Image 1 (cartoon, rainbow, N blue to C red):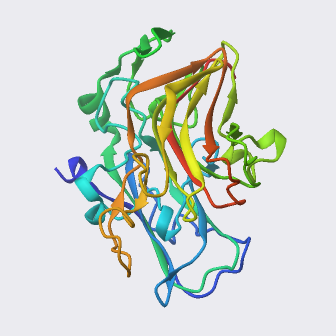
Image 2: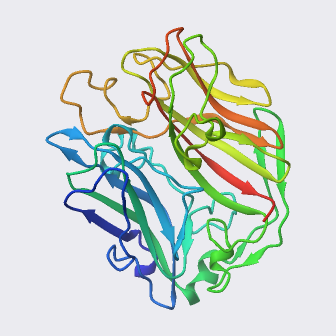
Length: 352
């Protein structure tokens, strides 16, 4: 049956110029993202074909999905620039480690974090400094189901559940009644916009260092409130009460070409993870993502292959405490906007 086949849910090619600091906002009809009334869909992964001009990358700074008319930038904010693309074409990912929003056809609420919608999907695309002149393309892939198929595929979403952080010995119980999956409850499932508390959503976000590092090997925090990132969608500083949590699963960073970045990692409740942080110099960066250059092929031109955002050995839970991504320079300041860091995980909200 065709409804159990992985398929393109939305497909958009932007042609012509897009001025700096403007948004392209195609309609669901434009991207062929509309469903029939008796259909429901879940998005599993995205592909971004970044714009270039004569071989030079252009600033498709941000791509944000819009589900049933609701913008999901709080949870999903993707870089679409060639070197730092966070959802590259599937065919070109080195080692085939594709980022997915969740596991399709799953009734485990901690795996079933795919983006779910009932009517339509599209996206908004921001052009950064310098604007865009080259074409770019965005595709979303997933599954479409007839309403009467949902009970057969999903049965019941198996609440209650628990998030486990083995590295720090912490467990977050998620108390919620089981949800019988049908057309009416579809958007109340994890990844849907009409969830009751607690809400469970995929989380993927990036940030630039808006200002220079201190040049003294101190912690640089990607924190919106102190002006270290451009906007709240880039905030990687989490001051959580007991009613908010984030399970961090992947961290990636593209180091500055001058070579002044030294280390990257997490800082949770005042402790570094891992202890001593990851060495992330330009020449030796285990958290590198985006274009494989300069590691797989150090010469120019850069090969069009990509690393996915690296998964951590174990996920880390930030819950009822302060947690953040931090970087340290080598003792020489990293210039503003010379670093881009990416983070993925699962976001839990226990309040409305």
